[in-house]
Amino acid sequence: MRTMMRAAAFSAAIASSYTTAAGCTANVHDNTVNADAELNFKADAEEVKPGDSVAVTMNATGVVLVDPNKDPAPADADKAAYFTVYLDDEDSDPLIVTAQASAQVTIPAGTSSGKHHLICRLHKHDGTPTDQQQSVSITVSASAGVMVGADAGASNQ
Image (cartoon, rainbow, N blue to C red; front, side, top):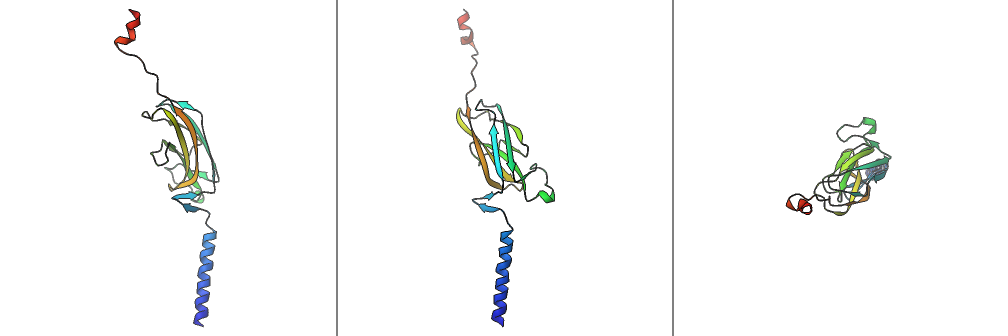
């Protein structure tokens, strides 16, 4: 009798854990959540100078965009998300964090000349990065120098 009770309890525990796992749609892997979402990211500039602003547009389906500084509605808590845009490395400080579909991203003043990437990553509202990210290539060019001083007017003499 005890053996049958143990077997029934074990079967119930297995069935309970299977039901709980089957109801979960997110899969955590490498500190990211595999979101049931799709991200689209575009930038309106290919060549910029340090300090310039770049217009970016972002769209995500399968989530509810919620400002990261506000609480989502209880019904939206599981699907609440926002965008984070980085320069070259998603482990760096973000250039912008927003739930808006379009924004202006400022290229940092100290950015070196050459090829760079703007990276947009979708984050769950709790801050967990998802596996949804896209990048856009940009070229940063040095700003034109202005001659100042004695050499600037030398040809006028």
